[in-house]
Amino acid sequence: MTVIDTIAEAEAKALNDKLAGLDLAGRLSLVAGLGGRVVFTTSLGIEDQVISAEIGTHRLPIDIATLETGRLFAETLALIDETEAQYDIHIQRFTPEKADIDAYAAKYGLNGFYESVEARHACCGVRKLKPLARALEGATIWITGLRRGQSANRAETPFAEYDAERHLVKVNPLADWDIEAIKAFVSDNGVPVNPLHARGYPSIGCEPCTRAIKPGEPERAGRWWWEQDETRECGLHVAEEASVVAAQ
Ligand code: SF4
Image (cartoon, rainbow, N blue to C red; front, top):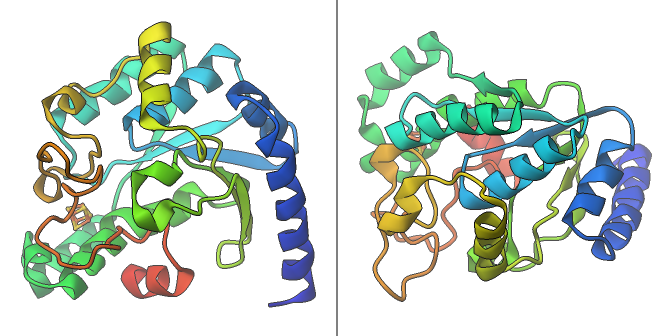
């Protein structure tokens, strides 16, 4: 870690402590006013809809981006349009490169991600991680909808942390919200949400890699359900080393 990284880490820790004492609008307003390019990446999940609603309602200078992987549910695609219209915001779509998709299909098959963790990481690398890198180009702050209650490996999610790999500060303004608070916000404020949530999909990603969960299952049990590793993620929010491997 460089001296600059060490300074940035200390600043992120100070920001984390400030954010802890604010409500959601206060957290977003604070980071929007820090200067530099602030980017919020949305998957259109229920948490992310809360953040989009706040950005749109308060007209905050925060860029909104989504990773249009080419494998999303039709309901998710429709929700992008609906959210833009309701809040008069622009959600920039970042798509995978055709050459990358073709190379992946030639090596693994279009749906090769079911066959091995390596093949799955490679697909997420092409369809998510590389577009994410473009979405975050020039960003100083990256806002996400991560919550501690989403899974065991998100249980320690801070409000702000330095991402030394991407050289930016990652802000998670909903880190301490539980799902009931999220649902109450959505209901009280008429926030549009993905209809799949009501059909047993608390966490929604690409269509071939997401299933409904059974009562009592963890929120993210329907993501890559055929894999045994309980810490499975797509690489967007895991250790940088794994992200790099996946992106390759
Ligand atoms: S979630 Fe599935 S379809 Fe989407 S990028 Fe990852 S492996 Fe590919």
